[in-house]
Amino acid sequence: MTKHRDSDTSKPSQVFGFAEYGSDRVAQFFTVSSPHPDADQVLVDMTASGVNPADIKVRNGERQGSVPVEFPMAMGREAAGVVLAVGDNVSHVAPGDRVFGAAAAGTGTFAERVLLSSSSTAHIPDGVSDAQAASIPVSIGTAYDALDELELPAGSTLLVLGAGGGVGTAACGLAALRDVRTIGVASNEKKELVEKLRATHIEKGDGWIERVRELAPEGVDAIIDAVGGETLREASTLLKAPGAIRSAADHQIAADLGGSAVQRRRTTPIFAEIAELINRGSFSPVISASVDLAHAAKAVAVVESGHAVGNVVITRGE
Ligand SMILES: NC(=O)c1ccc[n+]([C@@H]2O[C@H](COP(=O)([O-])OP(=O)(O)OC[C@H]3O[C@@H](n4cnc5c(N)ncnc54)[C@H](OP(=O)(O)O)[C@@H]3O)[C@@H](O)[C@H]2O)c1
Image (tube, rainbow, N blue to C red):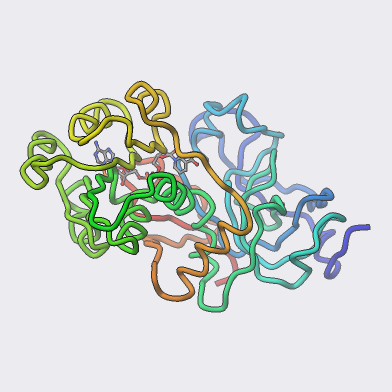
């Protein structure tokens, strides 16, 4: 028997999503019946949901085979909200709790009512906003996992490619906590932001590699990559020793270069650890835009431009 809070669980839910794969033109609002949590799922009244490049790849059909989709499918892979109901196997959160987590398989989060996978659902500490919590599972979690995998000692040098975006800003901010010297490659518009995150900014574009060489003639110890392609290939020539690459953006090239994709840990304890860093004031997510669910298309367009600053969040009821 599902444990639930009130009649909210039977209301229809507005979702922003797609009923066929395609460009931004296939994305629209649908009214669906409120989802019901399976044994290992948590139903929440969504208050905030992060927007990420992955949402666009799923909508375009680029993730078929790895991300299950059931039409009409809401976009979005992460959310915060208030628990409405939990499945039979869920005991660590209860109706009424403020929580966040990753979307349950086959579901999305740009919706009034959202299903989270219980194994990733964590409480939101009092000092953390819903928008901050909703930005943890995808981009911030990726940066956190990459840094844990690299195990860089204090004083080592990290190169972050795409330092002004969701993964990159989190990588810079979290690396600073480890006393790692960070060099962040980003467009010039993001210079101030990157420096605020205690990284040295290098302007992307022609000559960027020479600019890094000048700054770190001895080379860099590791790379966190949120860009991929030729940029990653070029960057690898800066490594003191090959292989210390963790990529969010280009698994194939990272592997070719002896590195790897970031191995994601979408679990309650890891997400709770990150939320606690924010709660203590040790780390602050960069949220450049909060857009009401009614204007979800605008938020998606910002991320789809490829030039988003930090995290973009869709919100409700603020
Ligand atoms: N595996 C996972 O769990 C996971 C999780 C999160 C993200 N990802 C992937 O990682 C990638 C990045 O995600 P994100 O959330 O950080 O995206 P994002 O917020 O859009 O940021 C990407 C950033 O890269 C910058 N950029 C583009 N070309 C660049 C270049 N040549 N040099 C330096 N910077 C450049 C862009 O800004 P400017 O060009 O304006 O400077 C933008 O700020 C995406 O492919 C995403 O799908 C994977």
